[in-house]
Image 1 (spheres, rainbow, N blue to C red):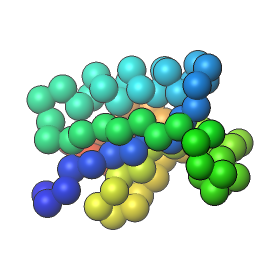
Image 2: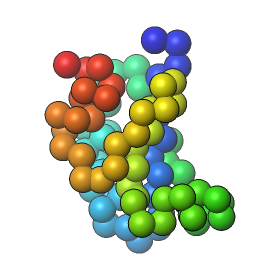
Image 3: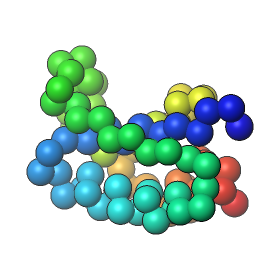
Image 4: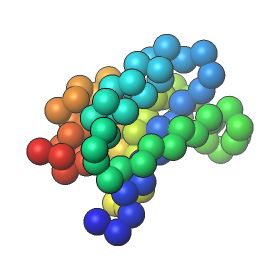
Length: 82
């Protein structure tokens, strides 16, 4: 895997985003994946695109995304952890 980068599109004071981050971080322990949170409110284009769908997890190398709610099994599948 050449690039093990993930983006979590979120915003401040979003309890669902906090839940998603906890779930994802637990799965990433011991894996090559790096998670970066992106606050959509810092970018008008991202805000328009993701306003009603956050949190969204994006795998950067192939642009596959998961919209909330995503169970652990779907995240594991997205990241080829199974």
